[in-house]
Length: 285
Ligand code: EPU
Image (cartoon, rainbow, N blue to C red; front, side, top):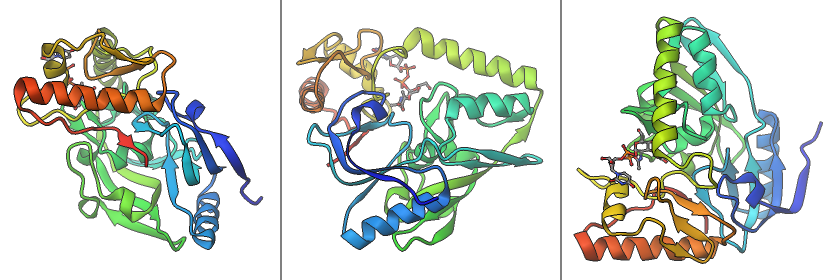
């Protein structure tokens, strides 16, 4: 069945921040063939392509995206072979953590509280509790701008703290991970610990985009924003969380409010501590 490409589709419902305008073109990819078709559609028309996973680490401008959004959250499925697991791009990381725990496979439990997908997790080298995607990734299967599927080894993906070269390489459709066998009950206990850490420290039921800034070397963005007295500070309908200062909460604001709050917080932290905070989320242009 050919992929359905729709026009002028609101993107806010596809982001955890619930912000941003429409996509000029939008494809909800369910198969690798859909992704290839989308990439060819965009190439034929000279359009930019924006891959979207769970929409958890991204800020889409109020003007939207003047190209093709390929949403990958419906590209689902996995298979295991011993301690190796192949995961499709749209698999949600919290679900993967639980599925692997059931199978007695350890390595994904630290992402149980990361509201992203496998594709987004590799693109941002998602991490928490001392673990990173980089630790378990073997290789990624990526569709390039010509519509060809390439295999990229972990060391070809430039994985560093909350960053990778994936966005310039194409769209990840599947990835292979190497896990470690362990007692399912022990893995589940770790999962429970990570979840309770997140529940007590992060505003996980609110509309947020995850941590807004990377931690600067040797310090914590949340600590610095907190010390600058910015908890609860608001611009328009976006405010700095009282629970964890590195999260912004959308209470009916706009992407423009969020961008102004990012700039404001960076300015205050620079003035107070001489530290330049780097944005962690992807701000789409
Ligand atoms: N802190 C404050 N005030 C705050 C928030 C934090 O003083 O409002 C202090 C804490 O007391 C602690 C330190 O800052 O001493 C670090 O805080 P926390 O333990 O909450 O961890 P974090 O460094 O802020 C990182 C990741 C999170 C990840 C957690 C758990 C980054 C930018 N953040 O947070 O990842 O969930 O560790 O491992 O690396 C994300 O990447 O989107 C994200 C949320």
